[in-house]
Length: 69
Image (tube, rainbow, N blue to C red; front, side, top):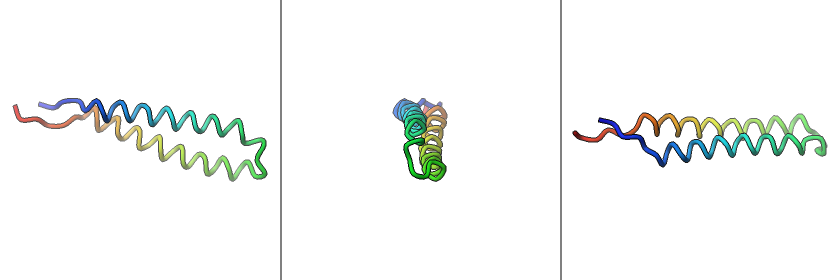
């Protein structure tokens, strides 16, 4: 029997939401930058990695941990 790891699920959801929020926040700051294309490339990479880690935690949490029955 497997149990859902709620800590992983909640952390994954929060991390994915924070990554999307960070990207959208920095998108509004791009026009003020000296080099907006390079800034958004870097922001996109950082937000992508953070979002991928969040999705990974979410999936691992939903798979759960095996407990002896």
